[in-house]
Image (tube, rainbow, N blue to C red; front, side, top):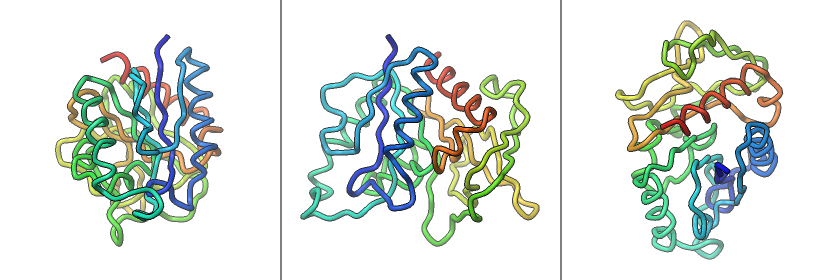
Length: 219
């Protein structure tokens, strides 16, 4: 069976705004509905040990780097080296929502994901009913015009110029990329939707995630 590893926030990668456990459970449930097994783990230093996933889903965020609590940047180097090795071996990556604001101690993460949350620049209006517009003819979103959902709109993310933008949030006359395919290595998708489980009550949002997973695994 195809198997995914879902990483949710813990310690230096756990923020107070997202319920990582609930999000991880909902993502695992969604994967199971499509016949994909999953392991949900908090982002501990050993989280990537003893597993060879077919897909890596990152839903961790930005927490508190506290050496007394969970180690130093140096202590975390083996984790990031293992992550880089998985990506180099061809394991596809799906970054969800707060993944744009995680792994600040890894200079490689932003370029891999194709973008970053930038403190003091990136922001979002209050969570509420939102419509996101599909702007690409890529096979991943073929036939999908928009996503209507109860969610946050991430605005002014730092986005690399070589990503393939699939979906945007329109705000005050400006279009902000929120879903894109990064150049890799391997297949990498970032999806800024998914603040909490309410996002996954939307059929069009669930359809988008299923499309992302299918495309990532088809590589």
